[in-house]
Each structure stands twice: as C-alpha cells, then as structure tokens.
Length: 315
Image 1 (cartoon, one colour):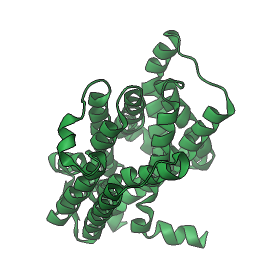
Image 2 (cartoon, helix red, strand yellow; image 1 turned 30 degrees about the vertical axis):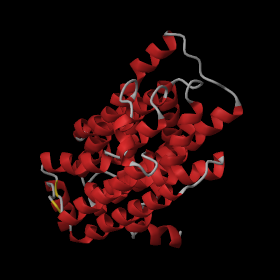
Image 3 (tube, helix red, strand yellow; image 1 turned 45 degrees about the vertical axis):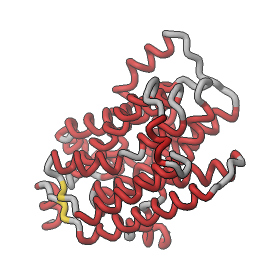
Image 4 (spheres, helix red, strand yellow; image 1 turned 90 degrees about the vertical axis):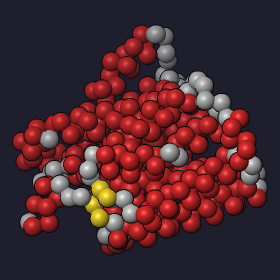
C-alpha cells in the first residue's frame, strides 16, 4: 500500500501506464477484429470494469447521491464522449481501417486536447508543451511512414479512418470535461457513474447490433481478452488517467498518448514477432523526447481553475 500511495502522489510516474494498457487493448482489438462485434466489445469491457468498481463506491453512493444528481450533466457528457463514443467508434474503425492509418490518426489526440482546452477556456497551453507534442507527433509519423515521410501522402483515408478522427475528438472532449468534475464528488464514484452513463448511451446501438445478427464469441481466448480490456485498459487506466488530468492538466496528460504507438510496437515485437528496425528506434527516441519535454512543462503549466477547483483548494 505504501508503494501504491507513493505512485499515486507522483502522477508523472503514473503517466505512462494508461498508454501501456491501451496499447494492449489496441493489439487485442486488432486480433479480435472480424470475430468480436465492435459495440459488443465496448459494452463487454465496461460491464467488466463497472462490476469490478461497484463494491468500492457503494458507500460513497449512499452519502453522495445528491451531489451525483447535481452533476448528472457532466456525468452524461463524459460517459457519452469518453466511455461510449471513443471506444465503440475505435473498435468499429479497426474492422476496416489499416493499422498504419489508425496509429497515425489516434496520435492526433495530444493535438486535439490543447485545442479543446483552449476553446473551452479550461487551460492555458505553454509553448514547451506544444513543442513537446509536435516533436512526439513527428516521431509517430516517422514510425508510421517507416522512415520515409513521403509515404504519408499515400495513406488511404477511406473506410474506418474518419471514424478514428471522430473517436479521438470524443476522447479529447472527455479529457477536457474531466476538469469540470465537482470537487465534492468522490473520483471513483464519478468514474463509475460515467461508465454507467456510457453503457446507457451504448445500449440502443448494442441492441441494433445484436438484432442485425451479430454473435458474441464465448471461447476462452476472447473472454480473457475482454477481462484484460475491462480491468486494465478500462478501470485501472481510466483511474490513473483521471488522476493525471486532475494533477497535471489535460494538455500534459494528453501528450502521453503518443506513447501508445511506442508501446504497441514493443508489444507487437514481443507477442507477434514483428521486427524492430532503425526507423522504429528513431521514432521512439522522438516520441520519448517530446513526451519528456511536455511532461516537464507540467509544473509550469497554468490551468484555468473552475469554481469547484477553487473551493477544493480552500477546503
């Protein structure tokens, strides 16, 4: 417990963990494409995460349900954008989009988050953070282009690629809206409520998918994948991500999303035997360098505090 508290009090050390867990989700999502219906996979992951989380929030629910009702607007918005929209659209895109295009478009998240934060007046973005994001994005592009940036013009943006952009925009909005979470609401209860709201949003699409003839695989492999995605890529990753957003701000936290591409390449090498080439190493160096630059600016960033933030500081 002391070690967990040590990590919890140092969000910069926690920052790489959500990208690592999401890289595993990406590898599994590709492996399950064509065999596991996308909306059903999104519903399955959040049911697993919510069932695991509920025992820890029932006490808070009994005492804080009035505050939860007052926050129903932000809960529903976070559930719709971060829980339902991003994940279901992402799995749907993986059914048809080439892996290179998906990796490239997913890496626009750290660029969308500061834009959304600036437009919504949530955070002022430092020049160092923007520079780190740009450097890291070049590293991702270098890996996607296999060391030849001219090949990026040949990427196909048909099929699922527009869905990836919409999915990433959903998660950028979610990351920014997290700063509006009421300070008097237990963070785990808020997360459980957003999961429930996201499942509610997904419900009609899930019914439509099943009515169209989709079947859910019951073999041990797919079920184990859903358990991993539900526990690590959903519950634990979102708890850590929310903690980092609250402590470091959405822009610095969003910059860590570039690490997903790096971790995905490592997992593909270890699990699938894909070779690591020079362009992987150059791109990885740029990703880590840009991430480090953006993360170091976290102490100097100037988030625009909401009234809830201010009351929390004075309490």
